[in-house]
Image (cartoon, rainbow, N blue to C red; front, side):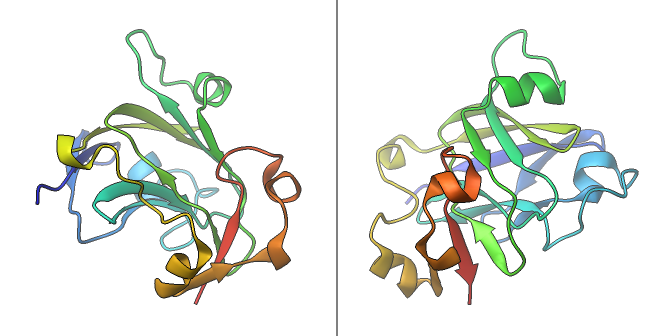
Amino acid sequence: MAKGQLVIWSARQRDWLICPPDEITWLDRKLLSAGQDPTLHRSPRCAGLRYVHYRWELFSRDTTHRVYLAPFAAGSTMDYRAVQATARHVLPLAPAAYETLPVRLDDGSWLVSVGKWVVPLSIDVPADRRDNPTIPAAYPAAAARGIRPGGGGRKASAAGGGRPGACLFRAE
């Protein structure tokens, strides 16, 4: 079965990097700001990208910054305010020992904003996988992965302002 390929821009290396599907790619201080911004977290307390159920997903363990995901279009700027204004998904702040419900990344080019930093990424999802969800909708399936709903079953509006991806899961 074909795997989707994800490439991401590295400020440190000033080049596109291929993200291996068997590793988490952390959107940490080193990747986003080449180690220059001390307000950004180091792994594993930051946002990340991982390959699960034959799809790439964006998740966050960041307790300081929301993570914004916006589609990249011709004429898109690398300004964090523009990404926040056009975001299709917003991952809320994650309380300690929790991570946000991940967002499935669809085929195409995207901009991710963490704090004042923006990183472009591009994903190529094989045609045979485009209609399959990343995360099973039922909680029992999520429990099989070793995660359980967190926050006492709080509604998305209480956890993240009613935005998509506002549910929180506790990592076991």
